[in-house]
Image 1 (tube, helix red, strand yellow):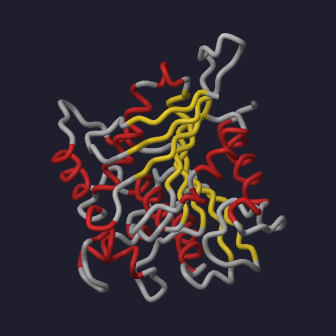
Image 2 (tube, rainbow, N blue to C red):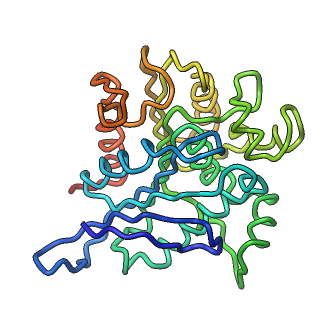
Image 3 (tube, one colour):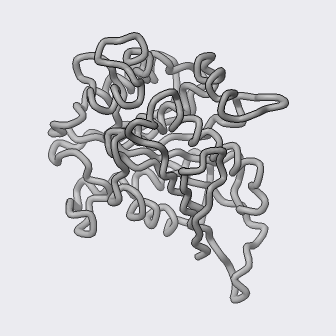
Length: 277
């Protein structure tokens, strides 16, 4: 494994941790290109959850993918589309440097947990949004901009924050929108309002017992995806609370039944991308 931290964005506070596959005794990267998974930890856009950072990164690395964990802006820096601009710039960086990173530029998956699920979902629904693009151009200078360069190829959403209605996770939505509940920008960040036919395929899982982020967030997202004929896979487990991450003792949420989501998501990636380790 090649492990390092770097900042590939225009934002000085953003840290990305990379877990890259290495082959052979020389520890040199080969020409083999593999899918990349970008992990977006949760934390209500207030903090970044450690148990939703390295633990899932290890799972996807073990499956043969290159993995990147992004420490995006939270708290007072979470509004103004900034976290999404940071994630979008990382996607663009990976695509531009796919040879050096041994990443298949057509197999970039974003994986988000809770509020990180909102961020991941935003990358697959806001990539050509006019309000977002105008903000992105304030952060990053472009000679020519193609929205497809920041669009992920697939999304894995784990108990995601999605809605701005009565089922919303208010803290997350207020932090990311910079607006109060019911305000124009608060409602604008509802993911279901931005699902479109070219939204990438989605894997979603949730628990019906989740008391922090209602399962209705995933169910209504699935409805929007179905209406727009976007391929998706949805799993709702009957038991378990919020923030289960990879459902192991390491993250203090050991649950073998719910832990099946990890293997399911890996098989889903391999299926849609026809990838074999």
